[in-house]
Each structure stands twice: as structure tokens, then as C-alpha cells.
Length: 140
Length: 140
DNA sequence: CCGGTCGATGCAATGGTATTGCATTGTTTA
DNA sequence: TAAACAATGCAATACCATTGCATCGACCGG
Ligand SMILES: [Mn+2]
Ligand SMILES: [Mn+2]
Ligand SMILES: [Zn+2]
Ligand SMILES: [Zn+2]
Image: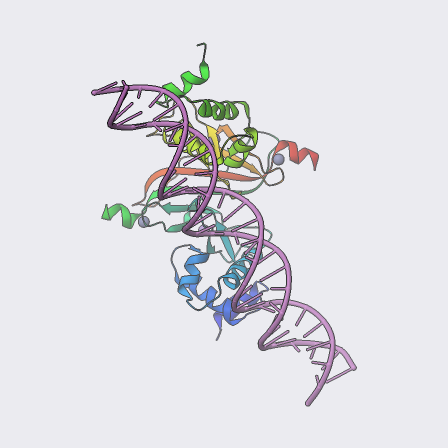
């Protein structure tokens, strides 16, 4: 209510701390997925390791999901409210722009179901599309 | 004919060298995708950097494709003959086993077509499924 | 109110992978 | 044969991620 950020953390069983509130605030305000270095840059005086562990905590608790976009650094974005630590329900496609190197969640594009050969036990599916984002495609 | 490995390289405009033939041989014999460290281990006396540049050359010439499976190291696997440096036609799903950490190409599972929001210009699509491979799923 | 406990934080150090610079070697070409 | 070029090998560097350890501070039992 009066503290929506804190409530978000508490709902995921994460103890609110100043650092965690700051990181969550950054993630909520940014439209794109952020790497550890990205978050660090938004919080100039924050310690890199603490941010790293904050993002790990958020991931473990199902608040954010990791995105391996091939840029070399893992990126993070907020999960949908329905997600839990056990089951990541918010399964969508990610787009990595090779020009501006930004990664976007595309919640409107779900990951299609796959028919794998027998014997494979699926835990997680990651679908990353690379190319030019609308902004970079227009700017040529 | 008498030198199928050399012919494979020549067909891709790659000058055959002893090192390149060795790396190609390893890639052809392994059923799974290999990281730089994997190839290095198969060729004990080979220099890591040279193998790295060999794999880069192979990638640039369309002989192999890169697989970012989230293991931390990029893996490489041979492309289908129809692939060219400009267009990677051999677009299939990859499976990463979280137990044995091996990555397999699943040529029988093509990457489905996606309907992205307007404005996105697609260059490449990567679909990686994580879980347990048939061997590890059975061994539990 | 006090001391103990535990989680969170910050700094330092380490590990792993990818990449670049540069000298050397070996092959092709003029 | 000499120059030009490609490939190789060693060293050094750049990142990114992760761990160890000491410290800080909130919280709890007494
Ligand atoms: Mn996402
Ligand atoms: Mn493949
Ligand atoms: Zn862009
Ligand atoms: Zn396996």
C-alpha cells in the first residue's frame, strides 16, 4: 500500500533491505532486461558483489528471471506475479538487439510447445531472437 | 575423395592445415557439441588460442554453428551441408543436460516460426532446452 | 537493557572464458 | 629468390562470475 516495493519483496519471502529496494526500483523502472553491470551503473555507490547476491536472491525467490542472451553477461528482468520459485510461468521470447545490445522481454510472444524426441526431461526452455530492435532498425 | 576432411574445408573456402584437419576430425567424431575446452582436451598438445581461432574461422565460413547453452562456455557443432556463411539454414533446437552438461543438436526439432511484434528485424534465433538427457534421465 | 545469533553487506581474492598483441614460422606468389 | 601473406604459438589482457572472510546491524531471548 504505502510501500509497494516492500510489499513486493515480502510477497516473495524476501526480507526488505535498502539495497534490495533500490535494485527492485531500478528493475521496475527500466523497460529492458538489465545485467549486473547495468544495475551497478544505475546505483553508482552500490557494491557490485552485493548487487550480484541481491539478483541471485531475487532469482531464487522467483521475483526475476535470468536471460542468457549471448552478450556475455546474464541479464535479469522482473517476473510476472504468477511466477513462483518452483515454476517459472512467465515463459516468453526474448529479443537481443545486436546494435544497442539491449534485451527486451516479449511477453506477447510465448515460447511454443516443442515435441522433443523421447527420453528428454525438460526443465526449462530459453528462446532468444537476435537482430535489430524497432528503434535500431528504424535508425539504420 | 581420398581426403574427405580436406575436401570439406575446401568446399567452405577454408585452407586446410594440420590443425584445422585435427579440429574438424574431432568435431565430426563427437556426437555432442563441443566447447573450446572440450576440443582442447581431445587435442592435448594443441594450443588453446589456435583452436579458438580455428573455431572462429569455421564459424565465419559457415562450417560450424555456435551454441550458447548457458553453461558459461560457447559450444560448437558442425552445420548441415546446406548452410552458408550468410545464411544458417540448419536451424534446430539444442538440448543442454544440466547433469552431464553435454549439449546435443536436435536436428529433428526445427525452431518454430515466431510472430514477433512489428518493427523487429530478426537475424538469428536460438532455442535451448534445459533438463536431463535420455541417458541422465534414465540413470537418475 | 544486554549479549548472542543470524542475515546482509563490503572488500579482497580467485576462477574461468574470451580476446588481443606480437613475434615467429611456413607457404604462396611475383 | 625475395616479398607478401596466412597461420601458429606464447604472453598478456579483459571481462564476468563466484567465493572467502571480516564486519555491521537488526532481531530475539533472557
Ligand atoms: Mn523476460
Ligand atoms: Mn546444432
Ligand atoms: Zn537496438
Ligand atoms: Zn546428460
